[in-house]
Length: 558
Image (cartoon, rainbow, N blue to C red):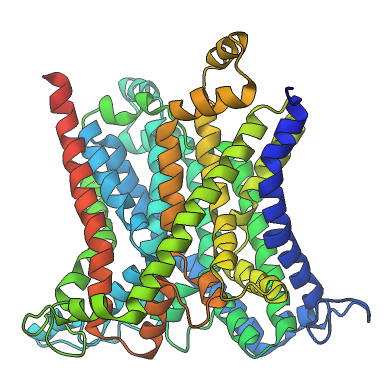
């Protein structure tokens, strides 16, 4: 007996729909109710109270928090754009092998925990850090580079750069170079070619990318919390502080406003750039990299300088923590004093570190499997929907968790899981992390399924194989790289996540939450040892893929 297509599609969507209903819609609805209740309760039985929203505009402290958050987001977005545009331009103009090598370096921070990168910036910017130690050699300093606005913006820019570079490189590679050549042959000066032909083709990607970066920056929690110090109070930090003292009303109202800004930002981004911002263009064969030599001009030299600065910002945090793991002192300083492996021994024999590591592994493995299955089910259902409207509904619902600020997800899920008795359990954290990862796996599988040859499936059906068996025996093995990629991205996302885990875990903390707790209470070189253990495999992998990218052209020509 064969099931009808509608029943199969409903079965594919059902697990993700249930997860989204319990872990996304219910928490957000509860937060909305709390924002409309005088005492911050999840109820409007006593009437709707707008006072929490009015306070956002009238209360001096709340207004300062909002304005300061906006200032940080605007400055971080501007600096990110100023660095990302010339960097992406150079990368798009390089040969395929060098371009691939640069992209490996740009994307390398994605695979290293954000907590580790922020910890590295405390080592770089601290009073006894690399910069101040270097300035001390020439009689300058120490300068106040840490626990202030400068440190916060530096950390935000370092996090945001890969996102915008990836968007811009994709757009720049899709430019039709023949238009530029035609303009030059007709005598147009270089600056007119750029302003009248090149930039208009890049502008939609730049504007939408900057808007996405701004929305991400507005929702930052860990970066200002670790690098900003007590005077860099942002919206997410304020929300967390209010929840800690059970002031749900103000926190919920500010969270709803933050959500509204995020949704508006994403809608405008999609309006400007279209759906291509969610699935970057593959029209790279028309890009400038393979067609035009990169001329040496003052502007080009500035672009190269921007590329060098970006590489320093992105890669140096991955390298500086390693030497400090071998210091003999109990405090982290640069350069390290002496050489010892005792901090690694402490980490490898500590119940706290081993327990945190094992919990993170358990949660990440389960998240990788669950998110992959749910994302695959949603993508398959969407690809087989005859109604374009139903397709759009599934796509919009699938990426919804990406739009919600993580601090809002954290407090909302904390509220619901407290009612369900899941706080502090692996199951509760796995469900929360799966919610975060399903949009990523959905996008991967939706792109992969778009290239599946339907005639292969039809041939299998005519041979008597059922739809489900054909899918698992033929379609899924044919897109195994996407299956592996979705698992790895989900695993790394769960492994790296700290904000939701901070609300979900109690004594049994994950590795990022354990590191965060020590960063707030007191850092020892044991943290450097953990960071080294986490970072070393990423660096080795980056070197491997970088060498492979350089060797590929030579192998092809031979």
